[in-house]
Image (cartoon, rainbow, N blue to C red; front, side):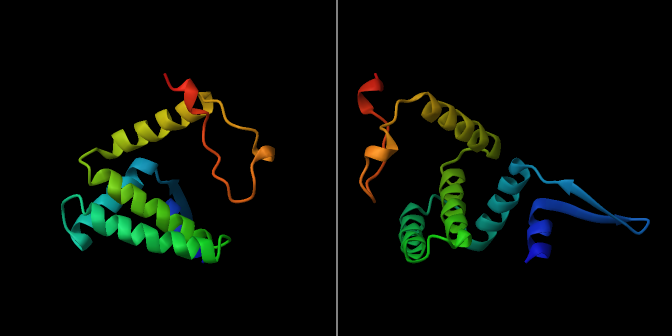
Length: 128
């Protein structure tokens, strides 16, 4: 398992008997994913099939929320849906950071006041 994780996160090379790891960038990951996905699943939006697959993955997450690979499946499918809308890898990263910044700036309800299973959504009256 560690070997797979290392290979996924780093470019692994051996120079003069020394193992060299170079960190992969998220944009490199996105470009690699896009090429594989297009070759494997074909071009186009594929929205309906991606949503159907996402629903199945969400059921698997509900069945075992501690299985991080199921959460990653959801992320991978979301990334697939994003690039299939015609945006570049760099745009995906920019929107991801912008959305996080937007969410950080929003007002949220006190999580302690929410019942178990209730969605924690930002307070909407601030979006003007």
